Image 1 (cartoon, rainbow, N blue to C red):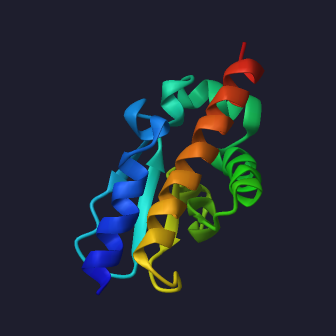
Image 2 (cartoon, helix red, strand yellow):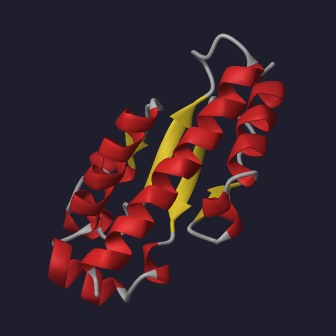
Length: 130
C-alpha cells in the first residue's frame, strides 16, 4: 500500500513546474511512510548570500510553510528536525507523510500543491534578492 501511495505523491511532485525547473529534488523513498524533498535554494543565490539575508534555512522554510498552508498542503520542515547549529545548515528539506491521505488522488494533489508553493516562494525570493 505504501508503494502505491509513494508513487502517487512522487508522480504529483514530478508533474510540477517547480520540479521541472529543478527548484527541488525528491529524495528517493525506497520504503517508509514519508517522502522528502530537498529545496534547491542555491538556484537563487549562494548559501552564504542566503544566510546573510535570511539567517539560515529556518526563515526560508517558514516562508515556504506559509505558502503551503495557503495552498492547502501540510509539510514538516527540515529545520524543525535539526538538533544543533551544524544540522540546521543542512535543513533545506521538507517531509510529507503518506499515511493519512484518504486515497492516492489526494497524494497526487498534495504533490501538485507543494510544487505550486515552492514555485510561488521562488518567485517571491527572486524579487527579494534583486
